[in-house]
Length: 418
Length: 151
Ligand SMILES: Cc1ncc(COP(=O)(O)O)c(C=O)c1O
Image 1 (cartoon, protein in one colour):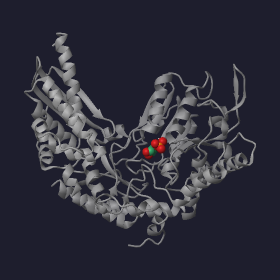
Image 2 (cartoon, chains in turn yellow, cyan; image 1 turned 45 degrees about the vertical axis):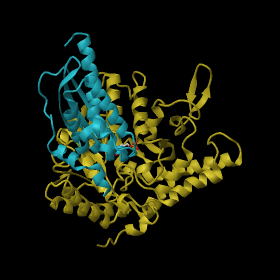
Image 3 (cartoon, chains in turn yellow, green; image 1 turned 30 degrees about the vertical axis):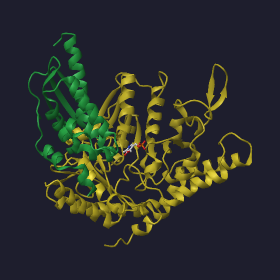
């Protein structure tokens, strides 16, 4: 099978981890990029270069290294901002998407009475049933703390967002709508335009969990017309310990800080403080500088390959996986079975074998998949499964990887005699 | 194959036909334990008569390792005194933490020595221990409940 668009075999060579030998003497078939991606050498080199050549605390010293560190960190921010279609001031580094979403929830929760983001009983926060815990619990707990009500979009039996009640769900009292762009379990890509239009119609803000979209397809925050976006660097070929919150400048301007301390202030007395301008207001302490630099190298790598090519490549792998897996008796796909509004995530169950055991047997073949509830416990309950086995694809996966998965699934069935 | 050291025949048998599964009787204590990393859940009943374990039964969802482990455990501990049972639990816990360095004392653990291979798979140790931890919890609570006379 050939892919005119993208040569994953060639791309694999940029990722040293694929030289490793796995259990059973097998090559690594890495199908867990939805959890975290592998890293190309260029990303590791960029981090190393920062540490070996430019390391100093940003925003502080007045010496050469500090200037260079500032410049590296600023450049990294500009790369991320451009990648998202946003502005430098609107792009805030966090340690992860989880922290970015908590930043929002705590900042809103800190809003004084009468402020735009102030929440009280009667107000509403809307999420969906397919959220990752990271985009559910911050809002669930914010609702608890403020007395606001948490409401959610259900999913259809096919695993798509059920928007039929959109106008009653997103009502006049709604202040925040926080939805994932692509489900990390089902692979569903949620159509956003009506959601965003309705959110703005009632004067609420729209928060996009872009963890599974930013790394995999082209998105532009201005075109989408969203208000906030969060993603994690480590799922986008970048290092761990670096995430991004993007927010509309006018909104960030009026938000309360979340973490307070060094770097994020303008003036400080023993009894009071004022805040630095954006984006530093939301970056307390010495930031993860090398990781930010590593992330910018990752995004440049993705840009050079081309997000559209990556998306098409993943769709082709998904098409193969859905086709082969659904032909195996006893295997059920969890999530949409066609390619409409879908990304490179395929969840499935095997009759008579628990996902944990599926993962164990696949591991013996060098195949790394995610098993369990995927940090989406409410979704699992809704789907009526204890968990699933999930294969998630990225630019370095080949059609042979899909074939290995399919053979692996068959060997699971023969091992457990089902 | 490495896998066979994990999935011993006796484990797969218990997984397919678990013992003491299904909640019944009048338990002295019922507990519910979960493994938050994989979502496995177990509800376990213990029926005590003084220090004697009259019955253990359970229900739950989980992988072959967790289901077989609680099945073998129930079979092993029913009829023992709580003290003796705790010694078995301790021995089993030690086996799980051994990283494959010991085979397990078959006189104490009987069929449960089949789980020795699990200790080489760090991600599965919690699966094997889920039922045992639930038992320990239920037995301790059941005992102190009896002492307080609220049976
Ligand atoms: C959809 C989605 N949202 C949020 C997160 C949280 O990302 P992190 O753990 O990197 O903060 C994940 C990661 O699994 C995810 O898949």
